[in-house]
Length: 438
Image (tube, rainbow, N blue to C red; front, side, top):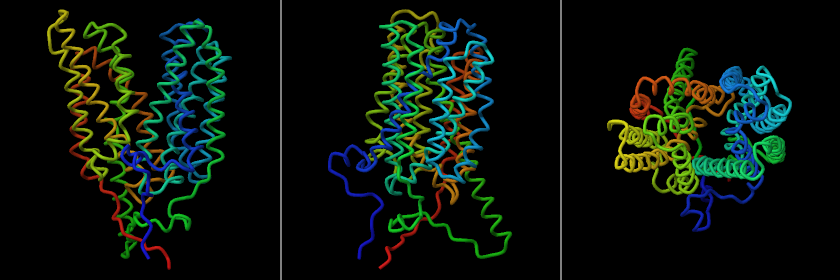
């Protein structure tokens, strides 16, 4: 009798587009999309709400937001411990409820310490969600489909962020800044709806009897030597996972650069209009939303560590393209402005392709690199690198940009090249075939 393959048969169009089998995953897809929609609606407008609606000083609001996000950093490890006890679904549901509570508290916050507190709650919800979301994917999908699912959920996230941002922008244009209060109330409701979608999911832990018929599964031989051998094996797993966390940091900083650095660089260093950053963001969103599944299925190397290495090489090239306009003397003549736009568009295309190569592959490695990679502690550690990078990026990039317009891009390019060189060491456990019981 033949074994069951890891990837199920899909319709021709879906296979060509790299889309995983979606039947039976409606609530999971809806939950991911709604969660992203909520992020897109309000997160970019939090500062505007507290300054223009509540009348608080911008600089102090920014500091309060940073303090709140920093205080929430340890939540990644607390979420990991909770996930080990209750499973990823419970943590994802709790994360969405916590985010709903945090955004509801926005409606009552009118002092700076209130701003810090509500951002502790909101960031705690975000950290909890992403600590458990990757493991939840392993509970609701087949092993052979997981890279496709990571790519697909990444596309969903970009679609949700763009739709949420567009809805918020439209409300501001039509109803003015007074609509921010209603946007917050709607946003809190969307998180509760996402929590409901996730709460009703049916999940199966990987390796349970329900999934034992899958043909390709990670298997690591147990050490048959002394306790010292077992300790050495565990230490080797830990070192490899810490290497993955380090390799992930340049990707985190690159993601932060898109929202933190690009706007400052294009306006202050290149003298382009403020809309330049928005145009580049739209280009990135369109490419990642429309091409993630196709590139992941048909272009990206099938071995995750090779996809990571390729992605970082492309990302380094993108950082170099971002540097090109600043290499000319300022202020720029009109002809140079055209050249700058060409370089920036090329840079954002390279950035987007690198993001597609890196995101799904790094996520796949985060749950498969070691035997306990999908566990609470390791997922908390992996998400901590994301949270720490996002908190540190604004200060790091602004300091480098003040020292010189080439420095932030050059430093990120060097970091990407180092990560590309380290990626071959990210070997996943040996895979063996497991036959279906007769």
